[in-house]
Image 1 (spheres, helix red, strand yellow):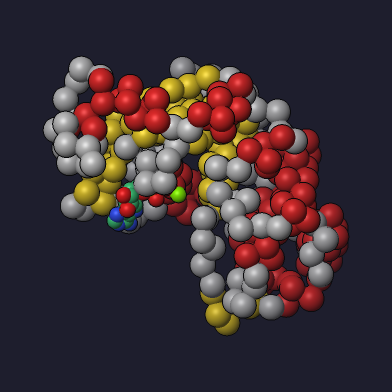
Image 2 (image 1 turned 180 degrees about the horizontal axis):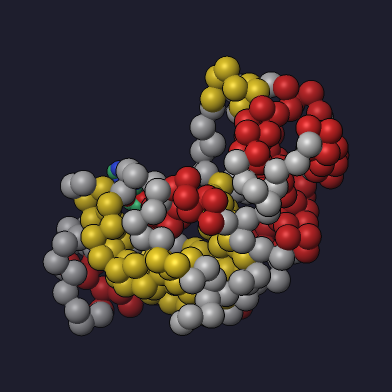
Length: 269
Ligand SMILES: Nc1ncnc2c1ncn2[C@@H]1O[C@H](COP(=O)(O)OP(=O)(O)O)[C@@H](O)[C@H]1O
Ligand SMILES: [Mg+2]
């Protein structure tokens, strides 16, 4: 569909020796909020990383188009410049690089965000206040020694500063206390309201979704997209788990020859 912001079509991908995603389809329109759910090991993070262009994974079939262009072969920095943002499940620590310099550098690389040092300082300060993040954090080394909650707030800071067209949030809410969860959830809302960006939220935590108006929910099992529905699917999964989706996948006709762990290959544990 030409009018979608993101169109993942029949995408298969994996590491060098392990196929992980099998013919995945996912379409996200501009400004829409999508939720991606699935049991541990289903391939949700892999899908996020493959959309972002992580070189750890190779695409073996299908395509990814973003904002009207085929990005399947693009490097992740080009995808980032095109407007895709991925918040990592476990953000990396970068010793020696102060957070503030990191943010300044990435903004200066983008023509639409380039600004004077003074205006930049002001903008970062405003967002830090909004997220209740002490400004002393800005001078600390990127993610080094930060608590889980602080790392997540810094991701929200990046999200509001970079204003991507699509943000993929990979379990941004995991391990957060109630207060931090509230701040992250307000950060996500601010992104939607101020930036009008689209979201793919990967989560097990339905609390973070309570404040979001969800357009579509997708369910992934063993690297396959097995169901899609509206927001009511979240409550259904919360109450009943993923078992019926796993069973349904096992009953599908097509063979899944390349995935030994998949119930479609007939040898599920
Ligand atoms: N870089 C990698 N190297 C080897 N195996 C990987 C790698 N990334 C993911 N996997 C495997 O792919 C499967 C899907 O993982 P992942 O995408 O992290 O699942 P989820 O995020 O749904 O829990 C798991 O079996 C995981 O071990
Ligand atoms: Mg994951």
